[in-house]
Length: 241
Image 1 (tube, rainbow, N blue to C red):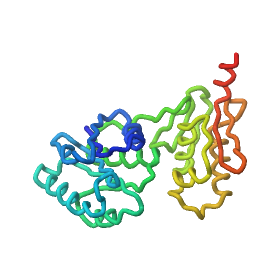
Image 2: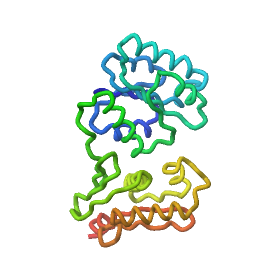
Image 3: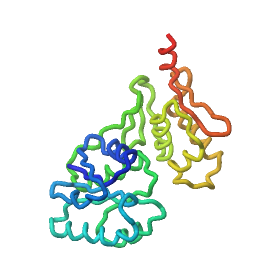
Image 4: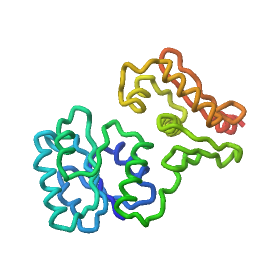
C-alpha cells in the first residue's frame, strides 16, 4: 500500500518515513497537494500547518479531498491530518467525513507508528503486521510497547506509551543533551504543568527497563539545570582504544 505525504518539513517527513516502516511513501510539496490524490494511494497524510493559510484554506481542502474520495471509490482509503494545537481547522475537520484520524504536533514516532499501523490495518486488514522499530541494539515491537535487545537476550520489557516515546527519543538523540522543556514538548505535548518529578520518574523507569547502565555500555546522565543525555560508553571506549 502506497502512502502520500504532503509536507515540506524535512524533520517531519523523515519521522513519518520511519513510522511507516517499509511501506512505500511519496512526498508532495504543499503547493502540489492535489497531485497526491492518485488512484493508487492507500493513505494520504496532510501536514496542515505547511499549507498556505491553513485555517482559511482548510474548508476548501477538506471539501476537495471529500469530493475526490466520493468520485474514486473512497480512494485514498484513509486520510491522516497533522496539525498544531492552534489550527482551528482541526476541529472543523473532525466534524466532516474528509479525514479518518489526526495527530497534534509536535510529532512523536511511537504515536505515529501506532496511528499509521491502525489506519493501514483498517485499509488492508489482511496485510502483514508492522515490522519492529530497531534503534541500536533495541527492538521495539507491538507498536513500540514491547522492547527486547539484540545484544542482551535476557532483556524483555513492556513499556507504557510515554516510556516508549521517551526511550525512542533518547536513543534517536544519542550523545545529545535534551532539555526538560524539549522532553515536555515531545512526550507530554508541551504541558508546562508537568512536574519535574514526573519527568525524572519516567527517565528512571526507562533506565531500569532498558538497562541503560554503565555495565551495559550506557550512561543516562542528568545535565545539571538543563535535562538529560544518553551516552553510549561502549562506542566511546572503542574510539579511545
